[in-house]
Image 1 (cartoon, rainbow, N blue to C red):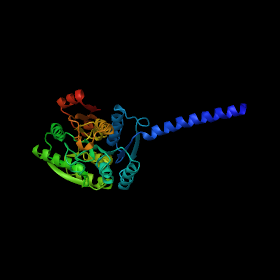
Image 2 (image 1 turned 135 degrees about the vertical axis):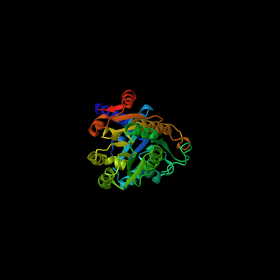
Image 3 (image 1 turned 90 degrees about the vertical axis):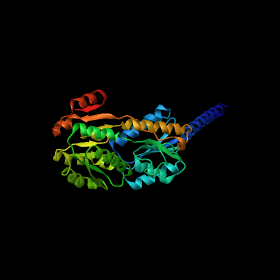
Image 4 (image 1 turned 120 degrees about the horizontal axis):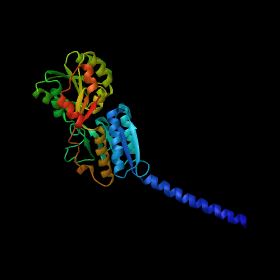
Length: 329
């Protein structure tokens, strides 16, 4: 009799354990999956990724608890982009997020139904991702990385009032950076600056092209370009040899040795992206969600680089950056 009672107790305990284990597994499998595809490792893109996680968390979507986040980094490899995008589709991701234009385009190539959120794309319309910024109309919406290029040109003239020739370095196949270059060239021309355009097809071209450019211009402007950003230290080395400044479009490159910029926060771009993904998880349709972007930029001055190049930052600009921006000393 004692053996029978013990057997019943053990069997009951097993059934209770099995029930709760099954319930727990069911809950875990029922949480939605968010696939995040990042083009490559880079401080700016890493900040966007960090912001996305924060934006999701602020809206109740915590990895491993209320959502499963599948993060993939393609390391700038086209075949990786394709296979990782397909992976998200195969696992029925509820939302896909693409960090950088190529990542978002890769996701768009594998599905026209699963919601896709652009993680800071410079030219969503030109890249063929949405029909319009106000009415995307399909399964894609998100955040546009729009730098205040007019303020960047003004900043260059404040620091170098006599500049007449600027070299611009970007990737020939990058639609987003090409869009920024077009806008910069137009505004620079109005400011009396001649822009010399230099393009690369990959990081392998950066050393030679940037060396040629540095020998022919008074300053260098770099748009939001992931390929050039990956080889920024090479550009900086060549520019330093000719003692000319680099005006990047992003704060990250300014912190790495660029002279100055007015830039939006990559982290804030990421948070906006995460918030939009959360709204879609809550039931909103991307077709009716207008593309968003931050309206203000922050001044970043690299005082250390200015001293190295023998450039004096106007006191009024330095004062403004000290109060409302970031001064790298």
